[in-house]
Image 1 (tube, rainbow, N blue to C red):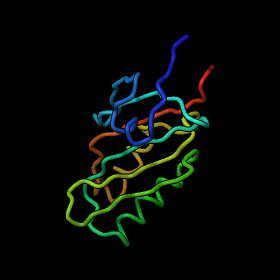
Image 2 (cartoon, helix red, strand yellow):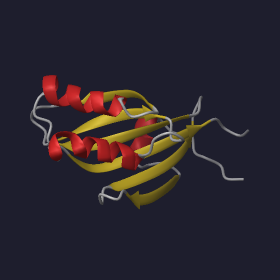
Image 3 (cartoon, rainbow, N blue to C red):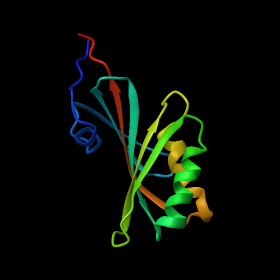
Length: 129
């Protein structure tokens, strides 16, 4: 039996979890997967996106497109006009949608207007104890 480390979502999303696997999407985007214990089973992703220029149109469009993917439950985007890369936090059902789907959806907006740099996926599961 493998024990999973209990960790906060933000530490886990930064890749400080006990178990990490690195894979890439077909577009060459680096995807890190981590497993942690949590109070409920859920999967979250932190996606680094370049190209968003405003909160009204760009952020709203990226959020809308991601929410249209079957299995995406929630999207929150931290946007700062002074940063080149912004961050989307996505809660999703990993049985219905994956990192490659989310990357493809974002990078298809505006014929490549946005570029995904990396994705950190964390799956939280209740402790087996």
